[in-house]
Amino acid sequence: MKPLKSSQVDLAIVGGGINGAGLALLAAKAGLSVALFEKDDFASGTSSKSTKLIHGGIRYLEQYRFSLVFESLHERQKLLKLAPHLIHPISILLPCYKTDRRPPWMLKIGLWLYDILAGSSNIARHRWYSAEETKIIAPTLKTDGLKGCGLYYDAQVNDARLVLENILAAEEAGADCLNYCCVNQIDREEGFVRVFFQESRTKENGVLQAKCLVNAAGPWANQITKLISENALSLIRPTRGSHIVMPEVLSQHAVLIMTPKDNRIIFIVPWRGFSLVGTTDLDDPDDPNKVAPTEEEIQYLLREASRVFPGSIWDRNQVLSAFSGLRPLAWSGGEQASSLSREDKIQSEGNVISIVGGKLTTYRSMAEKAMRKILKITGQSKKIPRDLKLPGSIENSWDEFLKKNVPQWISTFKISESQANHLAGLYGQKARDVLALIEKDARFREPLHADRPELSAQVVYAVLSEKACHLEDVMLRRLEIGYSPQRWGSASEKASRLMAEQLGWDETNRLVELEHYRQSLFPTPDK
Ligand code: FAD
Image (cartoon, rainbow, N blue to C red; front, side, top):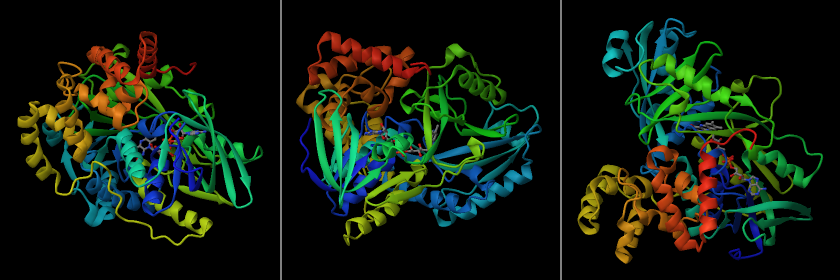
């Protein structure tokens, strides 16, 4: 295990999802000593299982959650500026059919209100198209019973890398962030908390003393409070959301559909050359480690999506992969899962703070709120920093960045335009560091797959500079090439060999890694 900088810190954080990572960065930048523990890989919990939208959440308008929508829309704008390599605007169609519960006038009011709440942070104003016009802008959409269609804007994010960049920036600012390190005991003493942890590979144990502890364990938040007190009340009510990955992009715009039977919404989003379809919303009080989509959920998503894209193939065998995440929603009884509030909640008891609820979109503001409490507890008077640049953040506009760097990378490193654009979009400012590996070893210029832009250098970079320990970390969270083994199966083979070289895996180890990665693409509820 990498030794910690100190065994006494101001702040210990349990959980390396977006909430833990965002807070670690803010606290480290404010000058606090910070240690963060993640039992698996960073973002391997809910934070890489999202619909990958940085959005206001148009459907919350119906629930009169205007302040949540307002806050999210303004955060969206800040994040677009902070990480244009990871977050970019996306257009979303909102078709209205005769069978839908909400008539066109209602949708038009919603879209209008969404623009108003965004104010100067708006990406672009919405438009409304007649049924005839919709056929032109979205020719693959079902036309039968179509009354019209809204078009509005939100943003799409690389969720796993957003978490990772917060972790890497926190480390740059002095924090210790350990993945594959599980907190298994927490003792409260007078004025501090003792945190016991174990490294998952070596089984090495460690202990740390912190002035304040933050429980940012998302769906595992109840388990963490139970480590502190057996009788602790439930903090969260987890609800499961599942997605399927389909092989084709069905429309140049994302589509938000309303399900007539259960009055829910589902997104069909163009994503890395596929369509991401989701999500469901079901209570799931079981062990968060075993969360997985059920066959019923997969069939439900196929059925609902096929209603609006009848010309495409919605066969079960076409599903490339499927994944589920648990929303760590603040506990509330009674209500239907989909009506539960997405608002964040920060609860403190002595020197232990729990942060639950919220969205990827609002992680920065959640971190600021938590930070105010932490400063009170630790008795420090630090300024909460506003400048939270990520390692890939760029100085100028995105277009200027591409214009300046892409041609230069192509000529200097002899890579293709699509490879250069891919590197810019994944690493921003840090792409140059990946390319530096090619200078050292020409083998690293080789693509992982002939049809894909990913370079061998990226696997090596993930191990050397991005804390990747397992094949799954690289395939699904550092690179995202791994969601279609059917098409690009040989890429995992190649990546596993590169990792074996870097990490000293023997052949048995390498094969175990490959098997583990394949299983993670289709987790089943009984596993
Ligand atoms: P997590 O990401 O789950 O992180 C908690 C971490 O704690 C885990 O990695 C876990 O391994 C770790 N941990 C647990 N126990 C321990 C321990 N004992 N020791 C060490 N580590 C531990 N939000 C949006 O803004 N946009 C969206 O499009 C969107 N889509 C969503 C779709 C779905 C299906 C779901 C479920 C959520 C979606 N959300 C979205 C919400 C958003 O993804 C979550 O609110 C957010 O990711 C929660 O982050 P977190 O850090 O609290 O939890």
